[in-house]
Image 1: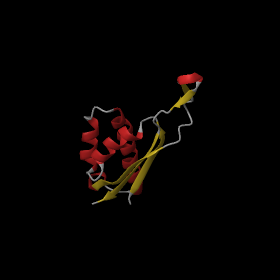
Image 2 (image 1 turned 180 degrees about the vertical axis):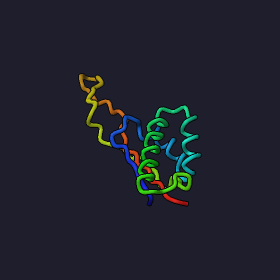
Image 3 (image 1 turned 30 degrees about the vertical axis):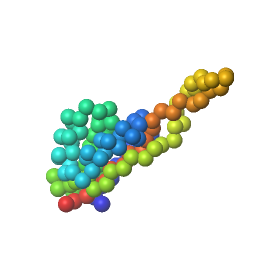
Image 4 (image 1 turned 120 degrees about the horizontal axis):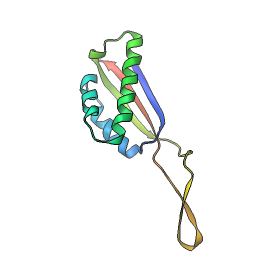
Length: 111
């Protein structure tokens, strides 16, 4: 493991972020950046910033960014503690609206 970066409590639904993370996992860093740059999904910009952060962390260690690849990438569901909204239901009841919040982690390694 050369470097890693994580974004906690990102306002992206985990199901939508996993689609983008699955595109990037296992690819070279340059190829992953180009793929994220031209992907028309909302989660792509969040994961692109996270990948740039992981590359910057690798440079701090002294690794060559051209020799790196995305060795591990994961998305987990985060606690929905920020938005407290309610939707009216039948018979005077209410249910909570759950917004998508996720933890995203990326690890880079040398080939």
